[in-house]
Length: 143
Image 1 (cartoon, helix red, strand yellow):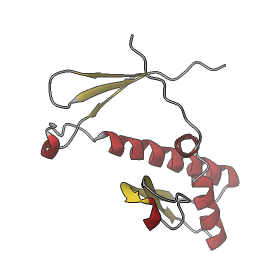
Image 2 (cartoon, one colour):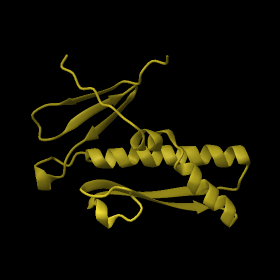
Image 3 (cartoon, one colour):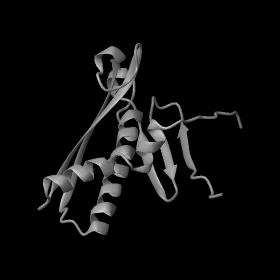
Image 4 (tube, one colour):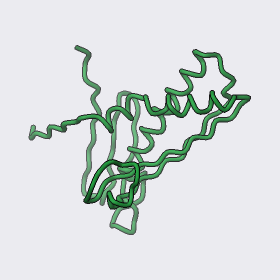
């Protein structure tokens, strides 16, 4: 079994500035000033969308490279909102509120329509996408 990835997060009294350490990398998360934060960094949902977008981009890049397709650049735009399930035709839920993440890919390069379509399919196979949409369990415990 592989070692689990460990991210360390700490917050003090500076509303709501949060320091994140991921290996040799440091990040800051925060909330906008409109909700009492200091806006020193992206909010947690922006970080979630960033992780998903980065994973999709890397997965598509790897696939295009392996296939030797002329993908010059890939741009992704992601958004998150809470919507009524009944307002989401392709979500499969009957009632209540659900999270809807939308991702738009723009593939630059001399690609065929078939290649572009395949790259869109591949984006949904990235590990973070699978993690978010798959069965999950989060265990929180006190140290």
